[in-house]
Length: 183
Image (cartoon, rainbow, N blue to C red; front, side, top):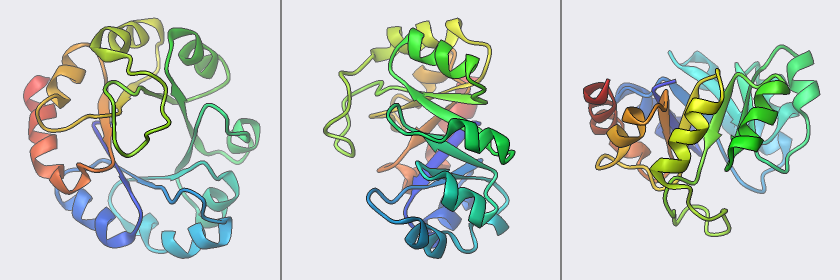
């Protein structure tokens, strides 16, 4: 769970894994299941956990390890029935606890800081909010939102099991070093 690289294509996923990403998450907002399946070809061959964002059908068709569902996404029951690792998004302790109770294997908590990759996100929870979520659940918590090399270690120090990055995925090696140094 250390470093989730959220990417749109196989080349970026390969680069992230070479840099130390332990999870690659295929995310293409607005894509159909067919488009995700096409884009996800080859992800399962990488030496990392493969997660599909928001689409249980595509995750099943790709033979992915898991699916990450946002706060408004349906499909948790189907994901669990299909044997997929279930990740959920949470911006509060209550959402994290509900996800854990619903069978989630991990929580993506945030946004920790404001992020340009998701301008419609909830207000930032900060390190204090991240720490509260980490202490409230027994499953791993992955920090997301505005995480980069300068603050990834801070997320680990308040209890996160890892960090998820979109725009900083190209900096996987430096991010992994920052995470490992904080352990």
